[in-house]
Image (cartoon, rainbow, N blue to C red):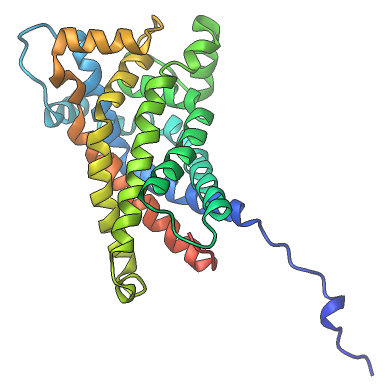
Length: 296
């Protein structure tokens, strides 16, 4: 009679590396949040680029005016203009961010939770890696959303920028991007982790954990968005302009033409989008990681 094969004779199952699982979870969470909140990003970019064409003394254009104008002069689905480069940027970008974050946390904080200062460095480090990796797609996404360029596809846009402006243009706004993204992620992770740490264990492990995580993410997102808004305005001006502005040039231009208020143009739609996207991304990521049996 043929015996049952023992455990050693069975083919071992293929298991993905935990960092790859974190990448997959992050990419999926980035897909959901990007699709939902792309219109807010487009409105933010339009508000910021309107500064360059607005005449002194002209009436201020608000978020709702831009929303109506896009639907009226273009069409409803134009609110998702730039979603293709957003997907190309965010799906791998959010995956890179979360896999880097997970790897750094497992390497340096395996046996304890990071304190507030360490959480800032952890978030900023992960975002720097993702931000530099995806910068060319960030440039293309910003130009798509601005309405100032008639690109047909992401590949065509990359080719056009490379041929007409050189590789330097694909990395324009690097300083401003890092000044925006690294502090945003650092501040976000600090507030998010500290808020969760302050909660009772029974709340964090209850059925309401996703809602609690989302609420902590919302609060952290508002703080981080407001702190990094000026850098976002500077980044947009640099990346939309074909004249290779430096960060200093852009800062001087914005302040000279619009004063301090110019650095907070588009703050409402950006805060809404970044806060909701980050809260959703972290909530989805942590739930997926928990289902895979990994500590996020």
